[in-house]
Every structure is written in structure tokens, then in C-alpha cells.
Length: 165
Image 1 (cartoon, rainbow, N blue to C red):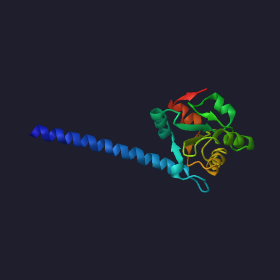
Image 2 (image 1 turned 60 degrees about the vertical axis):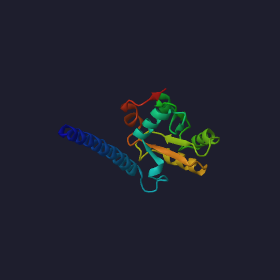
Image 3 (image 1 turned 120 degrees about the horizontal axis):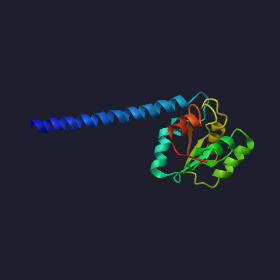
Image 4 (image 1 turned 90 degrees about the vertical axis):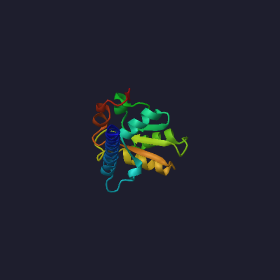
């Protein structure tokens, strides 16, 4: 009987530990998302996806279930981009916005679209905001921006996440 009680206590402690660590991961993700939103940003917390979330999504579903667009400069895309991402041009330039519009115009409006640049720090990126705004103006319901606080190399590639050239 006493052995059974110890076993039950061990199982309860094990479950409690993993529940607490799950909550800690969720809290850390929410904190990162909150940090990503500055005054005047066009997105909300629901529109921001962090690196761990996207990596997990790609591991589960593969890149065919989510449309990923690099909205930065061709040279950065050519050096390496998220596996399965399409190049859509720098959204801070008129021709880049046109490329993005052309790339997404025929997609169903309820599909998940992830936009990212990673040319520089999140705060200084000239491409994320215009790309996001175009997606919303075109009627897409699930547009997300990938939060890369420093840049693509530091926040994605250096973590060993899938990159293709």
C-alpha cells in the first residue's frame, strides 16, 4: 500500500512538472509576442508568430499547409531562406509590393500566410509592415508576421532551423 502511494505521488509530481513547464513556454511565447508590438504597428498579438511556433507548425504540417513569403531583398533570399518560402520582393518598394500582390492574389482568403524579412532588427525592418498591410487589405484573414528580433541569421539559421537555397 505504501509503495502504491509513493508511486502515485511520483506520477502526480511528474504531471505537475510538465504542466508548469508547458505554462512557462506559453508565457515566454506570449511575452515575445507582446515585445514585438510597437506603437503604430498594424498587427496584434494574434498576427505575430514566433520562431518556435513556425518551426513546430512546419514540423507537424509541412510547408504545404502554410504559405510563407520572404518579403525582403533577393540577395538575402538567395543566401538562404525558410524551407518552402517563396520570394515576394521587398515590400518597402513598389515593385516588391506588386510581386507580393501577384503571389497571393489567387490564394483562398482563409489560408495561413506567414510573412517575414529578417534583413535587420524587427524594429528597423522596412518590409514587414507594408507586406502585412497589403495582406489585410486584400482580405486575408490569417496573415501573420514572423517575429525575428535580431535578423534571420541570428533568430532562425543559427538555431539550426530548416533553410534552403
